[in-house]
Image (cartoon, rainbow, N blue to C red; front, side, top):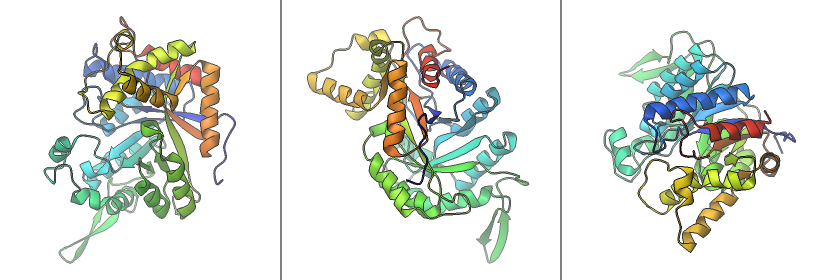
Length: 353
């Protein structure tokens, strides 16, 4: 393998900025700010926020804005996007946003880019000022080209734009002295091929389905072409996690997220995340319970020693030296609205702090 796997992999965090029934958007952001500070103090490598739109349980609609907030509230951890859905945005706008973030927090900014919409077809239509509802549009078709444009525009030299027979210099920021680290993200083989072709770091969304990870990473490593940015393949693993003093308590805390994912996969209406007590009271039909149990089997859920062993086993299985955990713990009734102590505990227990 081209990557060294440590017995105890480095840890990072993925945050969707979840919104519970008892929270406002302001509360959810405050909880994520506190979670990022816990990750920073516990020695986590990086903290990424996702991009999702028009979802009642997710406040991560604008990664650059949240990244600025989190970078300002932390000291050493890398902060980035997991990821920016590039077809929703003009490449120059993304390049400018992340060039400014890198200028403000040099050496601490990651730009993870994805091709998926991060929303339903109607919301995608609104984000992209039109285009086919539920179908491909020009931004998706030109994704590879737009990735290259973002990379070029963030560089100190910028890019030459050909327009009306003249070449115009175009830079994301006037005097860049460093650039964000760019990663390609994916949940299919497409981004594995593209990341390998462009010589970029790559992450497969293992936390979302748990299927196809091995194939995607094998494609990426086999087809990788060295670039100025990267000499050898670089990737890591993402996984949902809930860790508590006992297995039973960890499973209890994970159930609200189980119900959320079940609703998403079965086309049920989505709402803010319910409390642990509300989730416990939900009785599922046998077929749905079987599906929910299968999902849980692909997550890291349990007491600390077992959870850390699971993370190490995942890293060894997929040949990576870093694991990005998505803490999915629900909150019990009476939890302060602006906090998420169970998610914080998951990070501390996994890190052994």
